[in-house]
Length: 421
Image (tube, rainbow, N blue to C red; front, top):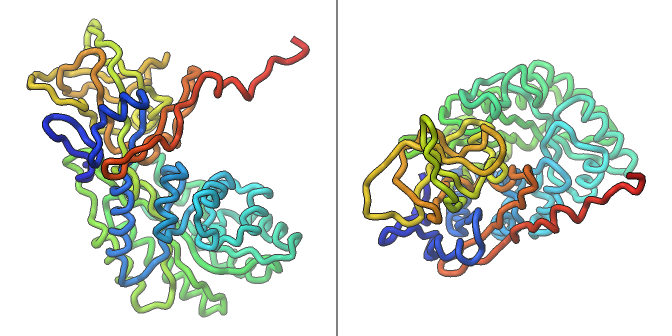
């Protein structure tokens, strides 16, 4: 379900006060379009909902890493959750405060660790004992102490897609919670390590708040146990994962309900709370618009072939995920038909929707793929040597391109023909 910043007026879809049709005329298709107001409003909703706990809200950069999007967050004093030195550089370029950065991910390289230490980040979310030792070694070589939180795996079932479930015992992420005390004791003896927190992230697109309650309960218990051993932690980082609505019948919990889960466990403690929301910040703040190329009558079904493909939006092919799709300009006809909406890529898995009841459309018409603000452009590729789409930001009546559409020259300029061929 989109925000009120995406509405039809006289049968035509607008983003804030700008017709989507106009943006497509100016910048072509496919194109990602984001609402400045939607992004700001989502951040402020989190601030208000969690006002009792006053957490550090670290926007999860991997959801949408365009530097204009990051600038919106940095202008509101947001922190950032990163998973690479490339994302760290994007935070710096967008004016973000690196002292409010947490660095997650299971495979941090020595170069990335050094860059993060030099940037004075808040802490690393450490995923393994081997990584902890590497961070210590790098910090010692620099004459520094690296701030860390151990990412523990609380073995909580978030009841979501298996590809985005990260809190299971068998997950590649984190350290088993029963083993964590020993790892913290080891960390406390390392010359290059400063313990700052505990971290957990159980998954994404979670509707059931009881899984968050179970996770935070285990983290507080662990923090208290560490304190009794003389190992003090300042922060509990509970990750992100709150669901958004992709279909109108989906009703994710309100942010205020989400906040109450953590208030129950943290209000009587001194631990600072860190949040890492991503999808719930930007997912419904963006659409992708695409143009119909052909309508094809197959032997057993009908296909609407568009100029966007799985390289532009991989979620339907990768997760079999649902995105609401509607014509940009609604016609007077109420006739509908069951179709597959597919792209030009040479793969059977290249689809945006399958067996979807859809209004009759013709070649040249524009469609809007909703809830595309998160894990849309950031997961796009150049498969089939297809240039990636443009990105556009809208604020009221103003709009501008915040990432130019790639050209074929862009795709080839880094390649060369070997001299020995």
